[in-house]
Image (cartoon, rainbow, N blue to C red):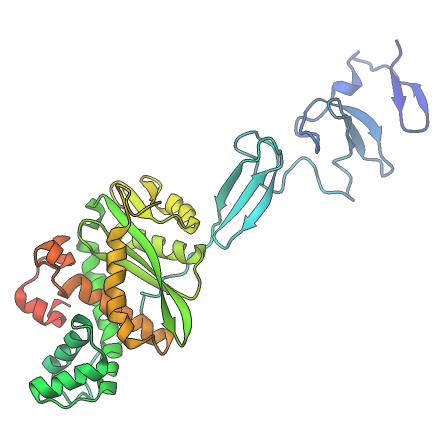
Length: 370
């Protein structure tokens, strides 16, 4: 039987090959059908531009991958499906990762792929600032006393000013106390950054992550928090105007860079923005998403810290600016970690439980720690 060559208009006998092989079987191995991804192809003449055309034996699709007017069909724009190996399409594109879905409706597999992009630092990374007691009228112990009233007694700056006047006969304006807090915040942050790498936070079984909202100039901002389950140590925080995956990536990466990784699990709520950063930055531990408050492993620990924070935050009725809120929260976290004794920790601070050894004098005057 003679082999025929069909070009759409003329049917002529196919000339025999010198080596006796079939012309239809010589197909490059990197050419696949764009419809069914089959490799069972044969050459099917050439198109109007003179490019080689192929025909699929499975779905009878005709295509010319070498045509310059059309994109190449030998390489795919997106990664292959890890389940069936077929083509995928971009389902959602985020800043730090992309979500793909399989084109085959029977497979319909969804997977993510991280992007090689540098993640922005958290808001807790306050800029370095030189500190001095220049142009301060009051001695250091009065300043520290006012800060203790403000952060540990859950009072406002006006009430702290009244306490200094009634109990210590020291007249200080509430505006001055507010300036002291903002001025000392970078100092406290520098002390915390120097001590935190020496703490054994990676020996803990679980780290808990959660977010809560605060008011800044009448608008809702989100405070992202991470706390150690065994020591009650606040690992880091991040203040953001958005409740999205970018903020979760920023917080979890900062926690990993500062304190490593927990021993067993990362615990969060069912918000899906924690899924991808937990898989990326803590691949060796499991990610537990709490579904109910009555579960064996719950997020009640960090919810209790949120209640403490809200008890301190509500008398202020919000913050005046983002920078002011960031500095106040950083100082509140410092008091919680290094100065405030916890009844659940038998009167110790979270830093002491985590392995930091300090004297009573250093606790009373924490500037000596630096």
